Amino acid sequence: MEDLFFKDEDVIKVINEVEIYITKDLNNSQDIQKLKENHLFLAIYDIAHTFYLNYIDINNCVTISSARTLSRKLYELLLYLKYILETDSESRKRAERYFSYNEYEKVRVLVSNAKDGGFSQQDIINLESKLTNLKKLFIKTFSNSKIKVNKVNDIKKWYMEKGTSNKKIGNIELLSKYLNMDYYYQHIYRSFSSDVHSIGNEKNKTIYILATNLYISNREIEGFYQESSLSSEIELSSFTNYIVSRFIELCCDFTNKKELWSGYKQKFEEYYNNKWNYKQITND
Image (cartoon, rainbow, N blue to C red; front, top):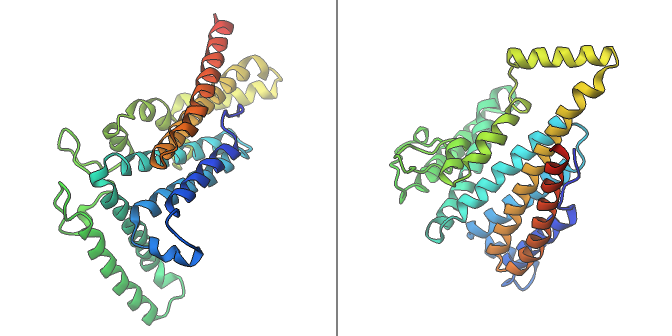
């Protein structure tokens, strides 16, 4: 994978600013429980911290397939952050749904696997009771939304909304469209899906893989494979750089540290323009 513009320490710096911002009114570490009901602050921190961990991993990837999988994850986290922060009037409720969904899903999976997981009958009863309560809490988070929710099966995703066509937003594709990010979903994110989902390749892809291996066997790989590999790496690095730039910009807006993003913005635009102008010249 090509070198990325943003270094690990750049993302660490942004995470530190998020931590400073959400803990600015705390006197000491014992006061941390005061944040328990501040779903917005905690959701932003959780998403930002998870983003940071995945970005560290992407810089240490051995294969381009693994890097694409992590880049998809970064894109999803960017959408979550953008969705929660989209509007001040909805941000706290959306953050509450984010945690309510995470807690519900964790217990739901435990209940579904309880009988095979060595749990006692009493443990299973306790888990089922907890799940029932979490269902009610999860449904309640939609009480003031535009969508009527009577049971948990009415909820497709925690970020469920009604789009402009009154269609329920229940997947990453529709969320991308809702947030005006559908170009990146259609042209890049979706093309990485084969690295995540355990499905077979289409016929042309299979022929390509077979032909590549034959060229390798005959030691004729350079002309055939190098251009495709380079193209994939450029696409991946460009997509990842864009995701990280938007992530940093959103975090800086949230923490009122716009000057931090301004410092990155100029350098990133220069890097981007120089890189792609150079690529265009060498390809002409």
